[in-house]
Length: 317
Image (tube, rainbow, N blue to C red; front, top):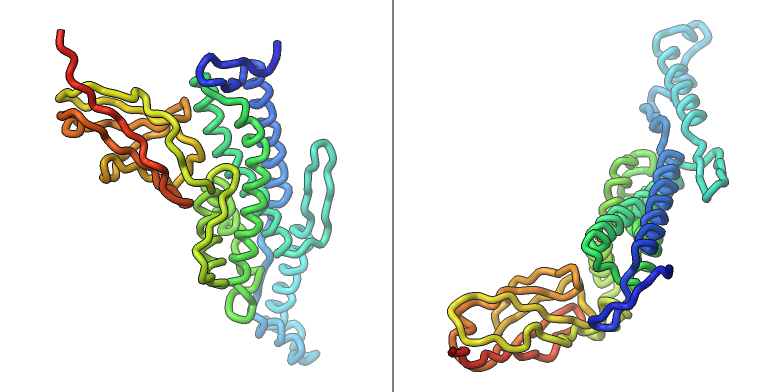
């Protein structure tokens, strides 16, 4: 038995039960690996900080005052910092069956690893949810399997970039020192970046546009969502005149996450169907008379050519 089967409409390959099982095992394995690395990078204790004025008192204490309360507090503070550093400076990184221990890692390096692994975790959660939906409806296309495998890498990379941009705003000249940045903050931001990769990319684009404004409005399309969306088919292509609303599907090439649908110039809500098509409700008022209804899609890269839904005369017995 192969991993794929040929569909009867249109010519697309669907993942078979064996292929779904293998893909699910890969996602679970990556999830276990990511969680293990999160535990290995998560600090056992937060680096301690004390008021520097307390430490400075050690240089002003005389031998006769060495056992004073102030000196004991300073020594205890230094011991706390030493113990915290010794307990929390080791990071365990798991690469398949091999473990790498990094001793003496800085707090900034630990935060970067936390951003990487939580970005991958967020992407895995998004990929797992999508896989469960499409596999459960037996509508999982074979062409999407590589996306599920590469998605965690994209989430981890984007989270790392997002963390670096965030740290640039926390520069020590005008912001907090690395030790003052909470690992919970980094983990939450990285997980959200992994979950909502498209929105995070748009936010980074806004940052780049603010830093390097351009006078040209050129857009470069990528292979998935950067090209102008195009309506390839309307299902059904014709509907008879009537007084009831009717469900319409449209097949789309180059769909984008931020698309909007207009029906005769009015923006209309739509849903993404398990088949990959878009579905919307044609209101009764638009099918009350014979004629055509223009459908257009607008994405970040442009607006599609209008597709027409024909309203035919009512069928009489």
